Figure 1 (cartoon, rainbow, N blue to C red):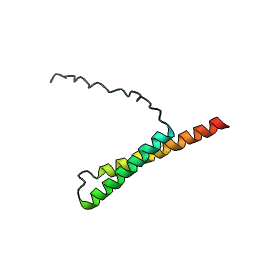
Figure 2: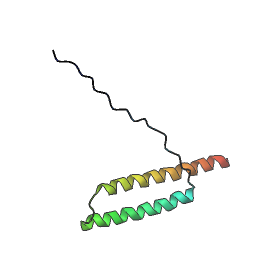
Figure 3: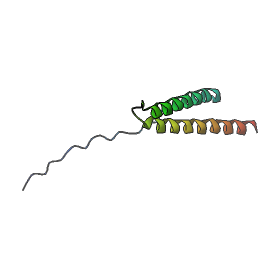
Figure 4: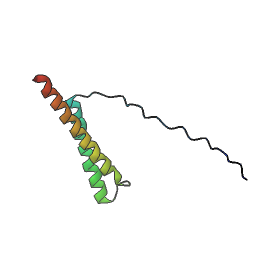
Length: 83
């Protein structure tokens, strides 16, 4: 019979918590306007055939959605503090 060789399993990467960066609503809005400009530029590049990776459009749209969510969450938190 053939000897059973055991392969060492690759170490599993543990998920580490990302450093939470607290940004103000104004900073988030500035970042949002920059991402919207990036999205428009990527769409223009895609229409012109210059964009090498069209996935950039999808990723940018998701980043914009995350920024909208973060802005809204901070607005709600600020409203709760006022009450």
